[in-house]
Amino acid sequence: MSQRLSLYLRQLQALRDEGCATVSSRQLARSLDVSAAQVRKDLAFFGQFGLPGVGYQVDPLIARIRRILGTHRLRRAAIVGVGHLGRALIGYPGFDEQGFRIAALFDADPALHGRTFGGVAVRPVEDIEATVARERIEIAILAVPAEVAQDVADRVVRAGVGGILNFAPTRIVVPPTVGLAAVDLSIQLEQITHQLAALEADDDDDPGDPRSDAAP
Amino acid sequence: MSQRLSLYLRQLQALRDEGCATVSSRQLARSLDVSAAQVRKDLAFFGQFGLPGVGYQVDPLIARIRRILGTHRLRRAAIVGVGHLGRALIGYPGFDEQGFRIAALFDADPALHGRTFGGVAVRPVEDIEATVARERIEIAILAVPAEVAQDVADRVVRAGVGGILNFAPTRIVVPPTVGLAAVDLSIQLEQITHQLAALEADDDDDPGDPRSDAAP
DNA sequence: ATGTGTGAAAGGATTCACAGCT
DNA sequence: AGCTGTGAATCCTTTCACACAT
Image (cartoon, rainbow over all chains, first blue to last red; front, side, top):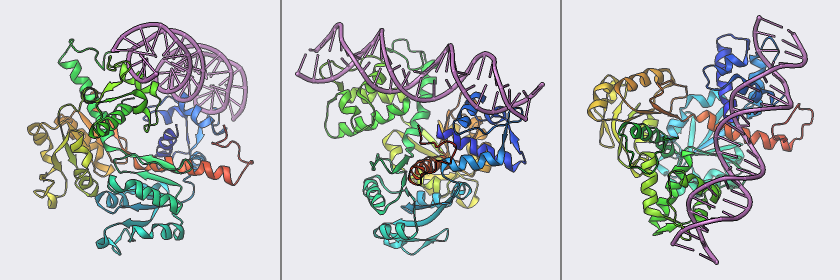
């Protein structure tokens, strides 16, 4: 459900930039694909916020959601792995906008040590413990090969980060006190081919098959 | 739910590589964080597959899931946008393994036209229609700036792709017949800070707050 | 009039528990 | 004995509908 909070936040920020001061649950629901009732239930869960007959005040609601999502203050993150993916993440515009600051970069390749990207110098992975403490890093973003992902995860956890965003195509395990999110590209692509396959099953009708996925 | 099918598939492939010929729902559930009953329900939905007293045969089950997910045959994909993110995706090892082939690259920057990455030449975006048809591209992966994402999406849809994987940090809309999946990095990061914020609320106990998220 | 907040109803998903097969 | 397939029960999420506030 907190995913929907992020969506609301984006929409509210867009509305604010257009100069809207208030918004109704119906407006907010339109264009996001959720119901107005859903919006009200979600927002009401954190306390009263709407004005009956008027709607929600955009600015206070943005502030409230950012507080709930924990982005009301700046969050310092490190990227481990400065290959193409790491460099793509450094330049990602959404981070700054949403209150994230890339404050450290790490890579195993000595050729990269000392080079800077986006004004941040690349350090060896051996420096993770010291740098995470000194720079007050709260989040580690793993853009490393699958083979070393668990090792790196263990290391950043020891160093004291509170959360990990994992891009390596492998499951990693962390203590329950550490937040974890993962982006698995193969799963996303299979989501799409799954839809393609369902359509194909409709086309070349094949009643001999035991049971079709798209049937019920 | 089809996300879980992808997870089962990964686990089954790992088991096969270890030489296992059969697997029980309990084994499969262990290490993935789902219940054994969940595994059985999911697999039974597509027909009978297990042998009571034995379990599931690994190889036939892999074949069956790949068919359901639509990766039983090779799927040809194009990447639009050959910046850092696009290049990271070209080298992503999971694509080959799971039956995807990057068969075309497009970019708006003329300086890139004709350069090859992973053996594939970069073409101008104006060539999308012709190339998608000629190369029988089924999936478009958008690694472009948010400002042009919708335009590019419209173009690849016109060109006839069946599905889109969107990395641009913006919602795009496509006809209902076109599959769509999106990777929004900010949402993933906010997922993590949300967990951080919940823990912080526990620490510095703040009973003055109307209602805490982590309370119930 | 217009729009929130919220119980009640509906709908899905997950787990339980066990009959039946090997 | 061991394990699947599946109805029943449970839990969680979403929608409905309306009293109430501005």
